[in-house]
Structure formats: structure tokens, C-alpha cells
Length: 162
Image (cartoon, helix red, strand yellow):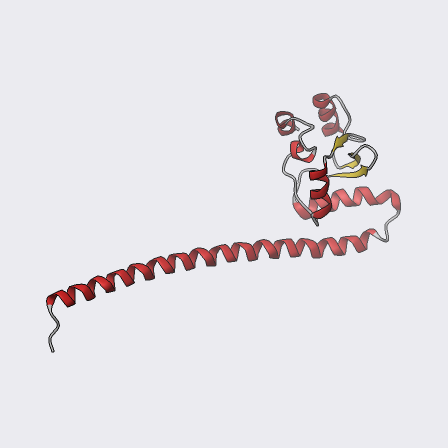
């Protein structure tokens, strides 16, 4: 039995629709695969850092107290490839972070003092409840600016100079 031209045209139209749908599904699959790979790579980097931090914690356990802060900032700079690192403590009475140690050089400290009018050491930054919760909940985090590091206490324009 011979198919009519109308049936053939309908069949060709259906085939084209299916090809288009297949193309869209392939594109969606590629996007999902790419996103999955990106997430996987990110999780792997995060896991690698956590493993290195675990080794680092063990290393710290055997250091004399006076060498702990310098070791911490040196290791943070190495692990995360940052320009500088601060060790802070949290003052519960005032809800402030207090800089206890900095990796900044004497020259960088002098520049900081010139711009801010305060030394880095003992610099106090107020931390609201939202930011406090964020600090306490994150295993680790990277802050990309002094402005963000101080929760806005140091203006972004000055932070970029620093």
C-alpha cells in the first residue's frame, strides 16, 4: 500500500521535529555535563584544601605558641594563593573581630596606617549577627577584598588601594 504525499509530508515534518528535539536534548545534556564537571572540579579543589588543612592542623599541634600565628598566615597564603592573611580573635563582649597577627610587611603596614589612620594589629571590626553566623557556619572561605574582610568598615576604594 502506497503512502500518500500528505502522509509523507506529515512524516517528514514529524522527523524534523524529532531531530530538533534531539538537538535540544543534546545541548541540554552538554550543559548539564559541563555544569556537573565544574561542580565536581570545585568540590575536588575544596576537598584537596580541606585535606591540606587537616595536615596543617596536625603540624600546628607541635609548634611553640610563638610560632603558631606566623605559621598560620604563611600556610594560608600558600594554600589559597592570597596576597595577605590576618589571624583574628572574636571579642564576644563587643561583637568585634580583633586582628591578632598579620602577614603584611612593614612597608604594607605603613601604607595601611597612612590610608586608614590605624595599625592593622589590634584593628577591631564590628560583626553583626548575620556575619557572625556566616563565620561560624563556614568551614573556610576566601574573602577577595579588605572591604569585605572588614564587613564594610574599610571603604572599598581604600581597600582596593591596600
